[in-house]
Amino acid sequence: MLNQWLYIGIFFIIAMFLPAVAIFLARLLSPKKPTKIKNSVYECGMETFDPTWIQFKIQYYLYGLIFLIFDVEIVFLFPFAVAYGNLALFAVVEAIIFILILLGGYLYVWRKDALTWQ
Amino acid sequence: MTPLQIVFILVSLVTILSAIFVVSLRKIFHAALWLIVTLMGVAIIFALLEASFFAAVQILVYIGAIAIILIFAIMLTRNIMSDDEIQINRSWGIVMLLVLIFAVIFISQLSSSAVISTTLVPLEFQGQESIIAFGEGLLDPAGYALPFELASLLLLGALVGGVYIAMDKKGGENK
Image 1 (cartoon, each protein chain N blue to C red):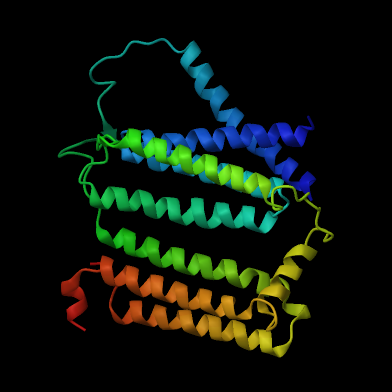
Image 2 (spheres, rainbow over the protein chains, first blue to last red):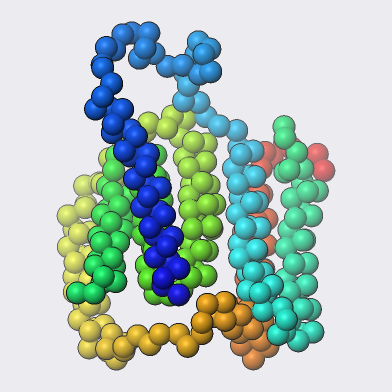
């Protein structure tokens, strides 16, 4: 079991290592001649106007929150799905109740127009 | 020391250090980013304990969703992300003392109890079997069926409450 994680760990280290080497080598080799234009803030080649660190819309948070709730729902349903073959009918009814309760929440969010982008 | 212990010590050090950064850095946005490192460390500790499912959940839910929500919350509530705030106030010395006293009491009590001397036993399940057993136990009426359903209610409460607080009140009253 732990060996599987060892493989993931090795990949994780390599994944960290590769960009680190690229960034470090680039810093080591590249000549540094900073000018005002080179150091200026750019966004897709456009000149920036207004402060860039603005307050974000609350809608992002709403979507994030709803995503989080259903993410956790999936986490609970995953063991159910894996063990599905060994389960009795009662367990399936339980899972359906579990989903229905959260469906209520989804309907609430839907009816309250929280999912509409304003 | 076995390689496992070395990995454990390294990961715990990184976790504790980044946790200290979370509570001590002045820029709240940087604190949120360090929190991700802390959660990653906890995920690796779960993996070391052979709790693969919880390691995956830790990454998926905590790093994938909660950390993102936290960053959203910072971007939404602070009007600029580079908020320089001192994270300590005047009474930090007293609090530190109280925490130390509590830690000494807690550790001395824990070390004398039977919990600390329990040796870890590896799971007898192989690979996928552990998650199947977890699923069966979670939905077993004699097991954790009620907490399973209560989790759904808890999530419903969190969803409705969170949306109610976060939603634009004008938009909500139209319905």
